[in-house]
Image (cartoon, rainbow, N blue to C red; front, side):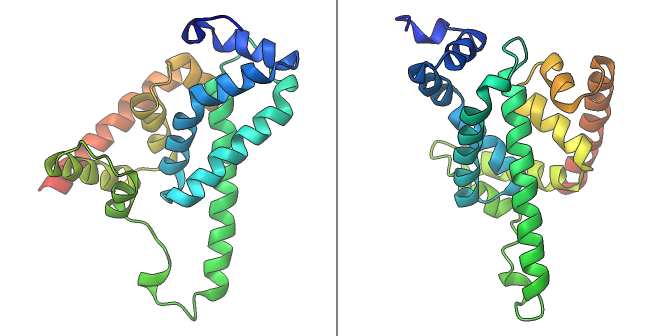
Length: 196
């Protein structure tokens, strides 16, 4: 393994993983674990479940690394795995709440609002004012259609490139730019309504 690990590209790490280098996989996991956890939080708003999902994502990545083409974006592939795991989790939760909804009052059903999301993230260095701004943005984000919310999360929160978003969402590059432009406009309008 090369000495300066930060300069090893994802592609090189993937190739090393595919040739059985466990150290390379550990480095890849270390590089992306926080991002994976953040993605899961964005999708399901539950810290414990997000931890489980991000761990499960890396188990799946490890098992399927030989099927992955190294020229593709690793972070886009990881995002797809996490998104699918989160959807499966949400569907299981929905079924569970449907079964027990007659016996549980609405405020006990574990529905996370923006305040719970941000208390789960626990940013120690953030001021109350910044947390309030985050709550406003999350409230507005949660009102957007999934396609709009997803493109904003990928670009503005996960810092994916346009190319990675195009690959992840399987839409043309021009559509990514257009969708992002209109999604940001909708978000800005919703945030303005939240403030008023």
